[in-house]
Image (cartoon, rainbow, N blue to C red; front, side):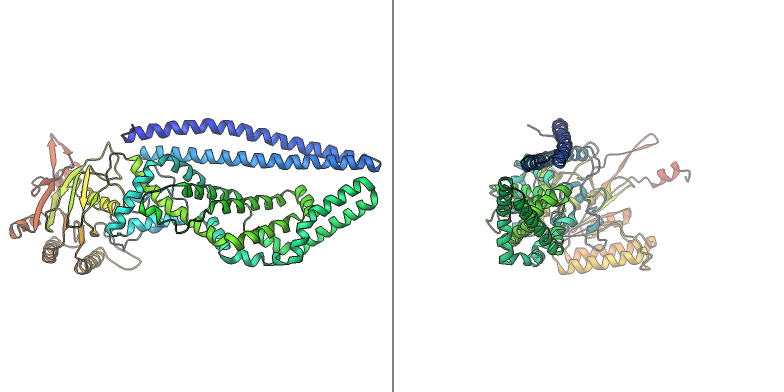
Length: 602
């Protein structure tokens, strides 16, 4: 059984090696078919020379038949090669998935979107807790390639659901973790496609396509397009038997077909370029949707993702097949043959029209479903990659208890875990300590794990229980030159926001790191003291990190509402050592003087 992150890493590396071997074999087979295609082209040229050089109706008829053989063989080879290339691309993507997972477990950058677009300094906690952006929680978790998948993950990290939804999401994540192997293929099918292209297709399916293929509702046109292949075959066989007169009729009808295609060329082009080149994307998405349809899930949350029992993957595969047929027009040789003799482009437009009228809306909904699964798979992958993390218990009563709580963005070999528990009633816990001793990291550790818990994800802890809090933070306060906002003014704005929130929401939980840094020490102390006493009066649980040891004396004034904790240092000779462990009581050892002396100021 794989019980550690190292075990997971070794497994990903082995899976990557297996994919590399498959890719080598597939590449060889694809290259072989490329040579066959070139050979068929040369054969076709030879047959054409023979046809031009031949004399007599019977000989011409034989050469005519021979001319068709390489074309049909070429089409079969192209289909086979396209299938192999799709398989080749799939295994390349699967290799990328495994290599990306291995890289993440080694502390490297995630190849998926890091959520920078969702950063918001005005949010209650996002910026302070590194939720979005480079080296963020989102960057650690995200495995989404679709627009909805990316946005859903951002939503669940930026908002708090109710207890029932959180528990349902936990069950969904656990269930998908049990089927993690199959999710790798799901992700590989979605890898490498442009987000905008998928959205364009959804928009086209939303109504544009029906308008663009309206011309195919002409009954006379539909009947003629249906009959053309049979008529042309009949004329061809008749020409072979009875000679030149019927060849003339055959040629005249081919010319008429060319003119009909030209007459509708504007409508055909409009329809085609809405989907051109997207057959691979649609086929991959169809495979991904089929994966979601094959899941027999027990969790309530996943079941509710299926608003319809309709199996839309088959419809998307049908659309992909039509696009593949339509793409045949890109080959000049095939374009002439297919449209002059079969009215191929018009036939594809009619198929698209029939398809759109029957299932377009259902397919658009099916494409959306992919994103919801991606978001859950992101958390399931996080759970799988970190087997020692746990799902927290969401309590109805006021609670926050964590054993061996660690920061999820710190590597396991460098992380120091802490145990922390609040009292049964809210307190302001003042944390003092030396520079670089771990105060800020501890606050962020508590906050970021709360965010994970409320998203229905596992947390970086041995055990965790908590009730649902409205998380508010005050950590990275910056000035803003564009808005002419000084650091002190920015701090006041943040404090105003927190006070407004705690007065409106009795379940608020506040994390504050070194308040009022933008003013003098006396005003800083007075302001901090007044703010703490305000929180005590309201009854808001708070973690308050500070260098101001005077604030720890508030425990004597409010023994039931204030607790003191600290992070300290150990001096070994002239060197400082940090254990990063939280301890009871105020700090008695500080290191600012030592640090200043080390740079020549003491």
